[in-house]
Length: 290
Length: 118
Image (tube, rainbow over all chains, first blue to last red):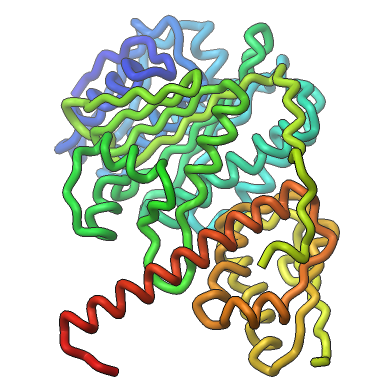
């Protein structure tokens, strides 16, 4: 089969196009799957995470994936972040140092993921200068996103991540995608309530709602992300099942796709020029914690 | 006054990045073992640079399912934690208290429905 991929931005339409690729190849196995990229004039590098997840699912069904017709500038960009290394191209050095490479992790790889973030983001001098507070918050946010995927997704096919720095816009974008059961199914299993996929995301990002059961509490990760992104004036996008949820400028927008994404994607975009100190207004004493 | 056990999170986890729930579980197991023996625990976060809510939920949050709030207040002391990490810990503790209160309520309600008096 052949699928014509259009340009992909990290927005609702971009996710919609990736879902269409997933739908087109949903039932295919032992086939040659050609993704024709001749129409792709731009692909936000952080979107390699959800694209890679979909292609991984296709290759797990023993399809042979071929990415064809890639324009030289797009190819250069996707070679720099290591994405095309998975599809027969050589990895080339990232001369501009604006990529956080595409990588796939197993759910047991928390520490490996943490090291990847340290090596590829924290200890690289090419990465944007950010205040210490902002850098710590961003780092912890991506760890929260990964932990969320580990704890909730029940994926057996791994977790995919990729990031990109846009120096002129002072934006840093990072995506984590999994091929798990999605937030809607998680909520259904936890509280026995059927809801639309976007409503399930709203539910999971509000109040003290949690799908955690058992002896370890939960339910903070997505709320912390939401608070940080609001303060930073960034953007947080969550795609899960057929639900789309976007927080931008403190406002939430939701939408329902005609078909589901086969898992969950969390995409965080932050303003790297943010000078907010992230220091607490009042001191907390360790004696007052418990 | 009960004897104190000093625990280093960095030593238990073996890393300054305390992000994994499984690593939090290791910390929890040591705290819980000491507290079950009636010892107070001094938990040091020296050299820890990143902490997630998932780690703290496993390490400390789940203690509220086994020990009373009083026992934790008197038996567990944290040191060497940055202010924003203390703020995160406080959120985790508040969430854990609410989680186990609701859980007890849920179990009680379920038992009432099932006619279980135990």
